[in-house]
Length: 107
Image (cartoon, rainbow, N blue to C red; front, top):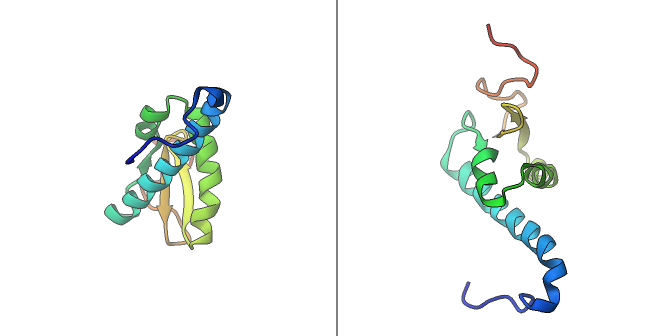
């Protein structure tokens, strides 16, 4: 960022929360893009790690719900796992082996 956005003015403070949400959603897209390019489909994108920037897991889950249709439109399949803390992005019809069902009990 070379300069501050023009909307970063005291008179816009009431919009800062929404501006932050949209900014974090842009970062989520960027991070998922880099994840897909860098890792295999058996590796998940850590929503816990991303939440370190947002500090509100409910907002992160909402962002993911908004972004999944974008990925599906591009031909990807998506599934959350590990209690909603992991996002798997894969090209096959079935999730990767490391993607557990939410109610699956390991013995």
